[in-house]
Image (cartoon, rainbow, N blue to C red; front, side, top):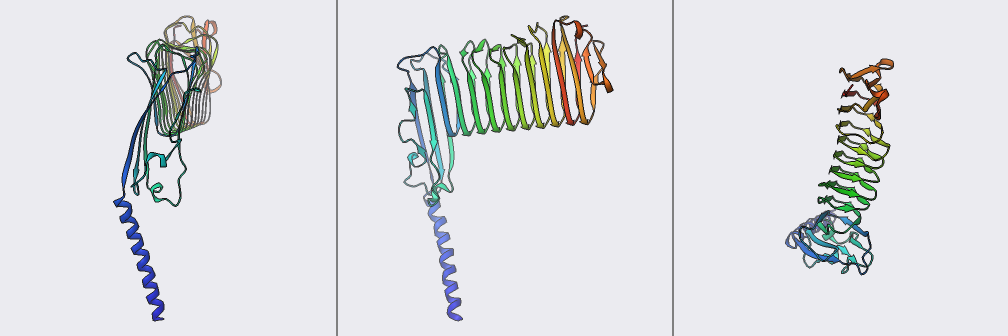
Length: 365
């Protein structure tokens, strides 16, 4: 029995000592790997529309436009930092692939791939990444942009007067933000998407010729349009989270559908129409669990609006005004007095299964 106890003591000492040694070794070999790289894209045979694909497993992608003349069609600046324990002797090649050429110039594709963790290497257990990829574009080139990151954020800012083709910004976990500064045209579809995170749009004097779509599974949408043109359907959808929609003086190239939807969360919408709409809008604003708040104003005799609301558990609240009337069963319809004779119309269906619907509207009689 005595020998058994001694054996247990020896084994315990080895385990504790080994654990302490492991921690001490990790701390003494701790550090960070910092590397920076630049790549330029200059196509051999330029196309009228240049396709650019930016793919990153991790990190923040920033897309911006040049402020001074540049001979390159695109320039990439990559900053990498890997920090943690057991970093002694490591380089960025231990964590990223491919080892040299990340830029496939002939195809307009940029890839930053993170290598899989090696389970028996403790440098992978405690590491953290800081990755920033900055893409600088030329204002005189029309691009078709497809930017994707698995974990990280994407931000794109478009300078005044720039024309683009299609634009797709997608992240699995992180935020997406697009800002257009004015007099911009998207000749193709525009889509912003994240699985877990927020999507923000701030757009001014921009023509969305093929419409707009923003989607997130868990997170929020903030969509802000000022003096824009919408050429096709406009969609903002969330599974769990809120939707905020602000629309000031939109012009519609054709009749469109406007869909704002969330399963669990609130929806807030503001619409101001002080210029001719140009076409009709059919709106569907829907939440399963949450509230809907709408604020509407127009100042045009040829423009009318109608809201038809339905609820499961909750209340419908319309703010009375001399230019609006409340009709329908249980006061479910709220419309401008000129809706029936208006040339252009907003026609909204509002639905909340569990929550309230609140609408305040004013229109020219």
